Length: 632
Image (cartoon, rainbow, N blue to C red; front, side, top):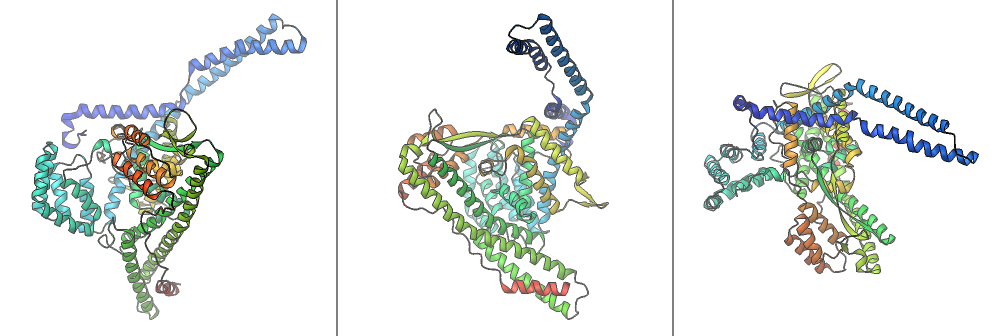
């Protein structure tokens, strides 16, 4: 779907009016729920209470107390009393609801403002991400990468982005031709060009991979004739919810990246605009010992996943912090590095930073510095780096303990499953409630929850005095206005998590796994000069376009059932996962082979060997102590 903007607006005015109308209807439908009055239901309730309920209650009570039926006048009195009382109460309610129309109007304004500002903030954070790169090739590559992720990018646009990434104009023209043939459906020509220039393409991608593995991966897909698809959405960053929640729990905003902020903004925007996210869960009903063992195993598995992510997340947060503070470049710490390589490069940068701090402290001691500002700034960066490095080391140390606890819980489950027989722990597919079963759940916001989330966010935005001026967002503190900072953007992600938590339970591991298994709504069509109604219409349309693809969730669930719960993935179960959820049969066959090869012996759940994160070096501490002595 193409949204016509800019110079095409005049001759396509009816399309824009339709888009505005659709967006306004969406906003009104959500806000209307605030004071919905059910007239018929209330009137029937009064009549029912005044009639049968009053007569039966009065008759029964009178007869029980006096042993005879109540007089007709008494029955008539109580009937009319209840009826008139109910009508007075109903009239008062109607008058109250009619005089509080401003409440619905305010709710409509809040929903409209929330959608409008969330969309603009998504664009603002994307610009902050690009701005966080140092001027030059790094910023140029990041901007080109964002262009390549756009679905509606023309062949010329694809060629331009390729030239920005590789610096090879001839290769960029080749990619433009590939994109032209792809759009025409001539995939045979796409394959011809890919084969013809394979050596040149691979050489360029190999060079690009060294400086930006993520950009190399996206560009490789383009050379293979693959492009983003609207119905598939956009892949989410793994563990972004866990990082945001860790930042809340440990009161350290540096534990999340700007990409995590963008992911949280997109999640809120798509949920408010009607996105329904499918979740696959499993439960057990039957032997209470088995049920307890399953709960224990699920808890240990959740702790293991958090520990598995925490060390890597802290390393990557530290890398992002070093780049943001200009102590490292994106070429030194590009996205996509392995954890072990990241540890090596980060340690080298901290070594250099500690040496610089030591040198500045020595100069300050000999009165050779005219100002302590540079020493103070570098010492502050070094102190925060040491805290993040220590947190990463502790995270990887906890991984070993969490892995041992998971193995112990898995052994207990296996012993009980063997004791009660294979049928007790077998995956059940037919009707019924007993046994181990797959449950489907949809995570979404109803209209009342959408209004509550919007009002929560608008209240926060007003409290922070966050407003848009021109193309940028500004906040006002102590009477001073300043642009939206990295810290302010991260705090916004925290507030979004707090707004969503009561309604979709973001803190539950099952919800986090389900959201991570789905793709986000594609929002490349957002533009800064869109109205709130246009943004609402676009968000609602894009949310409907995304396929409810549960294949990844089904495969992840199958991996967990086989590896962690030692469930026999029968042919019937495999066929069910393929037919019902679209899981890949090859993937399920590999899991069956894995189960047959492991048998009943002990198994490690460590998918990768954790990197070695050494103890903090004394030189780092000494440099920090010397700097603080001079700063005072």
